[in-house]
Image 1 (cartoon, one colour):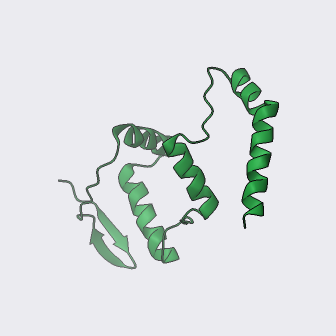
Image 2 (image 1 turned 60 degrees about the horizontal axis):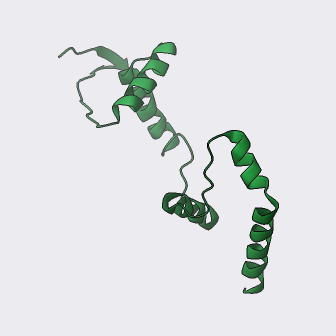
Amino acid sequence: MRYIAVTHEGRSVSKSAMIRARVEPELKDRAEAMLEELGLTATSAITLFYRQIIERQGLPFELRLPNPTTRRAMHNARTGRGVVGASSMDELFAKLDAPDRKARRRSRGRKARSSR
């Protein structure tokens, strides 16, 4: 194991703490390729991430739970409800633009609003 001497706030600090995490191989490869383009190693990126957590006193990006509409859409997508299949973009747009499909959607919207 190699140790790197680092100075932080005037005192010497060695980088010796280990982090182990399991991630999908493709995710790791793609992220590390992008980091390499930025001139960063995975270690330096994790260090930057940890420093930002401390600086911002939380994650350095917004993390929110999905609202009810988004949760419903996610559930419908997982269960296949309302999913439109097509073998090409042209076919997909034709199906989505079909007059009978639009009429069904409008009538469902009216039912939902009138039952409130």
